[in-house]
Image (cartoon, rainbow, N blue to C red; front, side):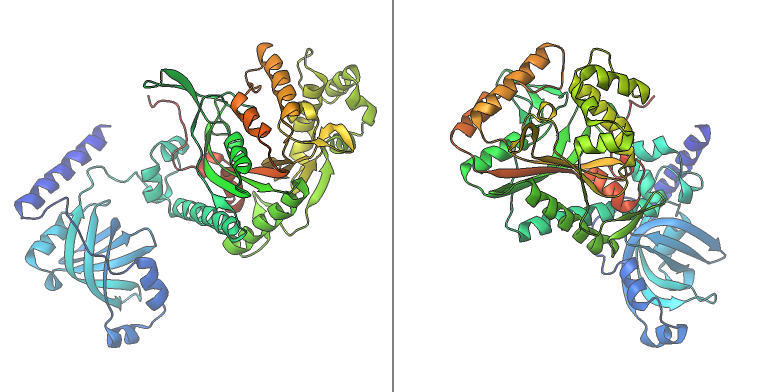
Length: 493
């Protein structure tokens, strides 16, 4: 800490010296005409002789991330968000004030330069600087060995430093932006309307999760940060929009892990006159298209394993998957005592008082999910764990629902929507009983949503895709915190 304070004081002295020399250490507007990445792409392969002949002018700005001085000249490397480019600072080529600036430069400072592209004696592509403008003084030094900042908590807590220190982090978040833009374009091209629904709900719904609670002073009521936009998007289907989607934040008051962040980005979309089979095909097409656009292939590598995103993907029913993975007779999943005994034999931790369906679901999560490395649609979920899904015509104990798993984790959840208001009321009331029994994640009865359904909702299919997990897959990141710019952390000590 003492060393940091000492360096900070030295930089404050340099800031004062800049002011005394008539240089504003926190400058105003600077017209950037070029980007480092663009210059390298257009001219980086040209020979020394060609550059000398063409004398290509450029004006760039960026942060100083490397600095070498010798005599009356020196080299700096500027990082501008697109790439890094070396600049040559020579006293004979600069004004007296500009050269004074070079003497006060520190790593982390921001400058703008105008000059000519050339190659050094060591053949390095460089800008010969003729004009220099100081833009911002950094009072804190870049971290030691800044080019390899590795302390995980510092990286997440001080993402601004992480972005300076680790160029590959820039690439991850640039890819994130392209992926979201690609999803948006894919859906709009297919006739979807992008909408925005409330972030604060009077009744939490649309998923099984514990909400965050806030208070609206003017209305004098408690509200809940949304756990899902589902019930509002389905209200829009009732209102006559046939295809809608939303990309936005959800909030769930749950634990934090490598695949869970309490604030996360979700895509939800709804299609009138469709069922979950239509969404299976749409999901395959969308993710495969994104892979080709972003990565150039539908065969990718995630954490050392090859993942094949080329459609079609495997379809596997929920009960069949549990039985086949664990070599169980289907009757085990219909009898609570047998299921409890099987879970114990498989070392699946379950509450001895848990319901049959919770026991079976624990078996699925513990024994099936980790094995779903290649894209797999798990279908036909029990009605007890699917309170918003339509009953299966061939078996009313099951629903027309799927969850998509890739690399052992859930990526998407979809179903043919329940549009029978009387059936929906019964299920809400059943959920309310579970809530009274202590299940904090069970649904409340949403009377306004039931009223909307009573106006009539056409047959509809809806889906939610976890954007953060999809980006983890596409950027080969093991933790959700590596694809969220500012993840939630414990308060700093």
